[in-house]
Length: 241
Image 1: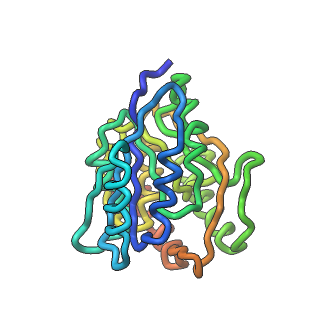
Image 2 (image 1 turned 180 degrees about the vertical axis):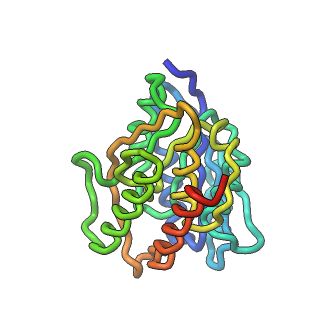
Image 3 (image 1 turned 90 degrees about the vertical axis):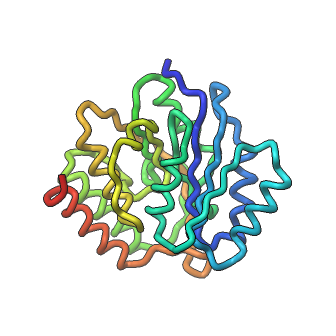
């Protein structure tokens, strides 16, 4: 069985003042298998709402939680916030958690199991595998996600079903050794392509739930991010060592 005592949970946050306390409540309630401890790293990407005030209040009222708060003085993008979180992570493994309520932290254990069995270095949580809850929303978003996953698979020879998923669990020493460049939503294809190039890397995928948001509810991904993702797939496969 793999030795694994602490999970670092990286939360990139931009204008999530209305929901970040709710996701922190869920993280607080999660009991990880094998008595794994939780380290929560919040990276505020220069929010213009009350995200910081909400986090400060939460930390003061929950001193028992291992929460680390970091802040960008200039908005840099989700990818940049993740880079900051990775640098500060101290757990043997780390996972990315959006500050909204689209993904359920109760399902961390699904991603952890292949690691504890000594099988995986990286585990992706797929919204398109298994019989889990999945909110019915945007047709063209699902087509776009599947196309980007297909394109990534074609060049990396992987068989992922959901490259764009938020839930990516990495062995920390591996992800810390990768020079990541993309500061916005290009993080997803870049990290997948660079992970796939590591010799003998063991990548697993498990089914998870998805409680998607509408744009009125705060969703931030737009079609331009899809175009950028295509550029990143080509760039990191052909023009970047």
